[in-house]
Length: 444
Ligand code: PFF
Image 1 (cartoon, rainbow, N blue to C red):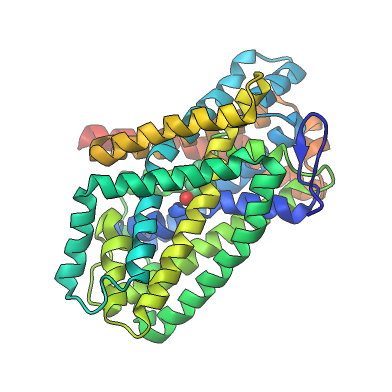
Image 2 (image 1 turned 180 degrees about the horizontal axis):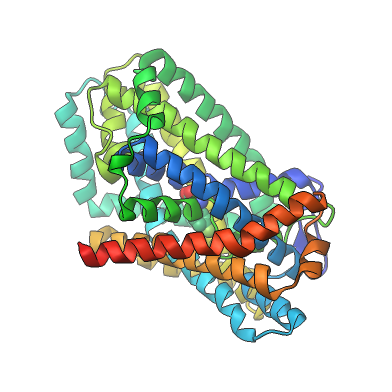
C-alpha cells in the first residue's frame, strides 16, 4: 500500500483506501440486517422511497459537509471542531458535536457488536450444517434458543470486539487501511454471489415488487423518523466517523466526488441486500415484517431446504460479519483518535474503549431494553441531531469562502446547489421529521 503516516496525523495517500474505508464504515449491519427488516416492518416500497429521498436531501449534503470538516481540521472530531470554530471565530461550544459523536459511536458499538456476534454464530451454524434439513419451526426456534443462551452470545461478542480492537490497535494505515483493502473486495464478491443465488432460487419478482411498489397509506410519522434515522445510520453520519475518516483523506481527492461514490455504493448495497433477502424469504413462505430476527430466523429457514444452502448460508453470514467488522472499526476510531490527541497511547485507548464497549454489549445481551434504547437514542436522536448541527455549522457559521476553498472538484453551479440544500432544505427536513415524530409519540 502506498499509504503513509505523516509525523503528526496519518493520511491514506491511496485514494481507494479512503473510498473503501468510508464505504466499509457505511456498509454494515445497517444495510444487510436493519434495512431489510425495517423496510419489511414499514410496508416496503413507500418506505424505501422515503429512505432514498432522505439519503439524497439530508444524507449526501451532510456527508460532504462532515468530510470537509474532518479534512480541513486534520484531527479527531473534537479537535477538528475546536479548530474550525476558532477559525470561524465562533463559540468553542461547537466541539459538542465531536463529543456527542464519540459517545454515539461507543453506544452504537455496545449493541452492534452483539448482533455481529449473532452473525458469527450463524457462520458457525451454517458451516456445520446445523439447521439443514430441519423443519421451519425448528429452525426458527433455534434462534430463540440461541437468543436465550447468554454464554454463547458472550463468547461471540467478546471475539468480535477483540478482532475489532486488534485491527484498530494496529493503527490507521497498518490496521484500518490494510483491513478494508482486503475485506471490501471480498464483501462485494459475496454479495454478488448471493444475489445470483436469490435470483436462481428465490421468488425474485415478488421480492422486487415488495421493495419497489409504494403504498403510501402505510407511512406514519414514526416510519418517516425511522427512514430519516436510517439514512443517517447507514451513512454513518452525524457522529464523527466520517469526520475522522475525512481527516485521513488525501488533500488532492475531491470531497463531493468521493462522497457521491460512497453514498451510491452504500445505497446500492442496501438495495442489493434487499433483493437477495426478500426473494428467499418469500420463497420459503415467510413474512417480511418479522423484525430484528428476519436475518437470523427466516434466512436459515430459507437456506435449510435449498440447494447448496449450507454453503451459501456460510457465505451469507461471512458477508454480514465482514460488513459489521468494517463498520465497527469506524465506530470506535473517533474515540481512539481523540484519546490519542489527549496524550494516551493508541494501544491504551483501544483497550480502554474496547472494554467499555464490551461491558455495554454484556448489558445488551442480558437486557433487550438496553439494546433497544441504545439503538433508538443513537439512530433516531443523536445522529440526526449531530447531522443537523453539522449542517448549521457548515452552512451558516463557517462562511462561503472557507467552505468553497475546501470543497473542490465541482463547478460553482453544483457547489451552490449543494450549499443551498445544506443551508435550507437539510436543516428544515431534519426538524420537520423530528417534529412529526414527536407529535406522533404524544398522540400514541
Ligand atoms: N453505517 C453502519 C451500518 O449501516 O451498519 C453503522 C454505523 C457505522 C453507524 C459507523 C455509525 C457509524 F459511525
